[in-house]
Amino acid sequence: MFRRLDAVILFTSDIKRAVEFYRDDLGLPLQNATKDTAEFFASGTRIVIKGNSKVEQGTTNAATATPRPGILLGFTIQSIDELCELLKKKGVRFLKEPRDEAFGRHAIILDPDDHMISLAQIKGAVQEEFDLLGAIGTE
Image (tube, rainbow, N blue to C red; front, top):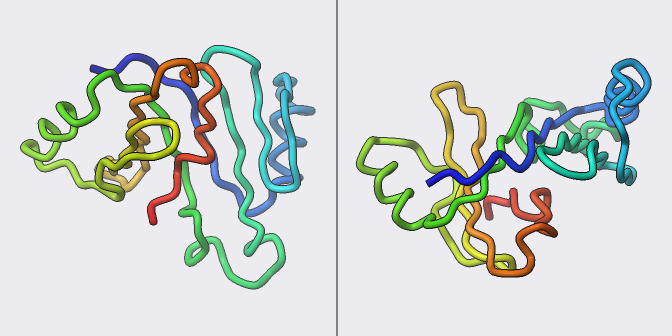
């Protein structure tokens, strides 16, 4: 049911420091960068760093800010409803129940340590252009 790991998304309170570490210290190829997001690698599994502007501006701390601190693994799924029914039967916790989005269907589950796992069933041609950051919302 799991097709591939598309991205590992890391949430940070200091996007500048994170980009300097991954780009300059580790030498990873930076593909895109904005004031609150950086994406490494052009193809295959991507590493995405997502800053939290509320934390960066000092208006809140990482423990109470949105998005949640930590990581998110982003998987492409062929049959999300079938997989989610199976996961529910196994007692897996859902942060975001499966629902329709512009790109297809999407859900977010939690592992035992509350790490987020994005499950996305992408519609047709947008498969390779899927923006995982646009899909992480839980509202």
